[in-house]
Image (cartoon, rainbow, N blue to C red; front, side, top):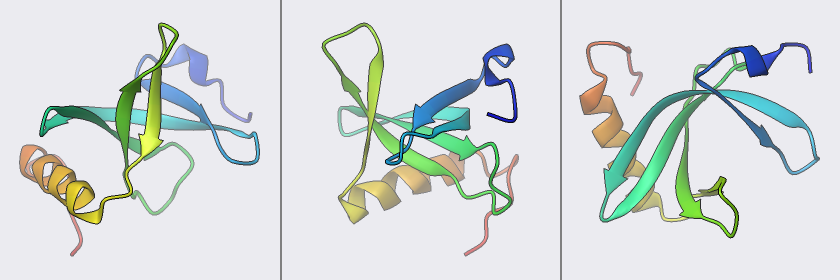
Length: 93
């Protein structure tokens, strides 16, 4: 990996479908309908598009993040995020 992500506290390293490690900046944890979702910003993405993943408890001490298939849930979490960070980010429609 070109950057040393371990040195940064707010960086989450995930493994993609091809087995590559990808660094994400942890932006926020959002509660929605009794579930938790993380909002992440890819470290090497020039588009500045956030990724929203659902937090699931696994069999280990580590949290598991899974993709959100329900478009309505995804948009609801994104709207909460936009409202919460309206003064810190500029959002394109």
